[in-house]
Length: 490
Ligand code: GLU
Image 1 (tube, rainbow, N blue to C red):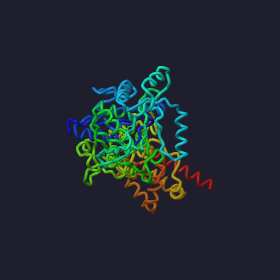
Image 2 (cartoon, rainbow, N blue to C red):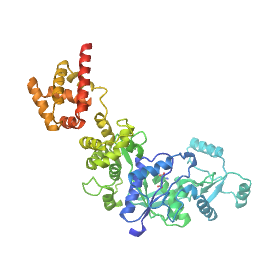
Image 3 (tube, rainbow, N blue to C red):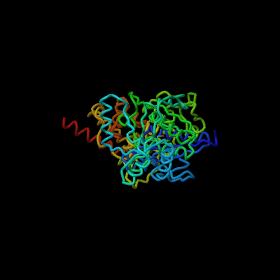
Image 4 (spheres, rainbow, N blue to C red):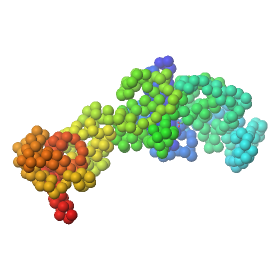
C-alpha cells in the first residue's frame, strides 16, 4: 500500500473547524503518515452562499496548531493543484460536458418557482420527492437555443432506474442503495459552480486519491458518487466512513452539545498534543490499553482496521485528564512561554513583564494541580496581584477578631526571620502557635487566606517562600486591617 496512499481532508469554508472535522483531518493525516503516503488539504468552496469570510484562515490556523501538516495543498503547492475548488471551475465544466455528451447528464432550465411547485405537489400527493425530468426530453437544438438566449440552467445527472448500487465501506462493510430512491441531482449550478458531488468526485479522481476517509454524514452521498465514477468510467477510491461522535450527554455532537471549534480549545487552555491524542481515540484504539501517545507514536500505530463503526463519545472530562498529563510533563520553560501571553491577556502581568525566573518558579509550583493552561492563569494570579477580596466562606471562618491578633504576632515573627525560606517559615509558624498556645490551624488558614485570597492551593510554606517576604508582610497587614474594620462595623 505504501507508495500508493494519497488521502485528503476536504473542508468547506462554511465556518470554523470543529472538533469533528479535526478528527477527520487527523485520521487522514495519520493514515498517510503510517503508510508513508501523501496527505492533501483541498478546500471545497463551491457553495458560495455558505462561504464565510475568515473561515479559511481559521482552518489553516487550527490544523497548524494541532500539528496536522499537509504535504500538498494551499500554501504548499503540489503537482495536482490548484487545491482550492473555486480555482478549478474549468475542470468541472469540461467533465460535466463529457457526461452530457455521453448521455449521463442533461441541461435543465426549470425555474426555482417551478421546482418549488412540483415539490409542493409531491408532498401533497405523498409521491417521491425529486425532479420530474421535465427537461430530459429537450433536444440538443432546443438546449442550444435556450443557452444562446442566456436562459439560466443547471446540469443534472441522469439517474439510472432500477439499479442496486453497491459499495464496500472499509469500516462498515458492504452497503447497498436502490437508485430509485435517488433523483436527478444537480451537478453544475446556475452560477457555474459545481455541486459538492461533482467537484468531489472529479477532484478525488484527478488528484489520484486512493482512500476517502470522511465523517459518517457523507454516507448518503456515496451512492451518487459511485454512479458518477461509473459514468466517467473511473475506478472509485476505497471509501471509509468514520464513526459518528456523540456528546457525553447523549445525541450527536453539535454546536450546542460540545462541538466547539478547535481554536476554542486553544483559548480554553488545552495543549495541542493533548487534543490530538484525545481526538485520535475517538473511534480508534491501538488494540491495547495504551491511551497516552504522542503524534509520532500515533503515526506508527494508526491503522484503519482498528477504527470501529461504533459511535464514539466526546468525553470532556477525559480530555481534561489527558491535558493534565501533558501539562505535568511539559518542561517548565516551554509552559512559561505558552502561558505568558495568556497571563498578559488575563491582566495578571503587564506586557513588559520580564521576571521569567519568578514566573517559572510559580508555574513549577502550580502545574501539577492544573489541568488546563487557563487553570494556571487563575491559580497564578495572586503571585502577581494582591487579593482584592477573600473567599467568602473562608473569610467568615478564619478571619475572626481572635485570629487577627494571631496573624499580627506571626507577622512580627516573619519580619525578623533571617531567611525567608520554607524551613524557617515552618519553624516560625509552629513556634508562634506554641507560644500563643493555639493549634497551628489558627495561623495556617488565616495566613493562606490573607496572602492568596483563597483557602486552597499549593503547600503553604512553598507558597509563602515563593511569594516572598515583602508581598507576604504587606498582605498580612492588609488582612489584619480588613478584619479589624469588618469586626468594628459588625
Ligand atoms: N466538503 C466536505 C466537507 O465539508 C467534504 C466531505 C468529503 O470528505 O467528501 O466535509
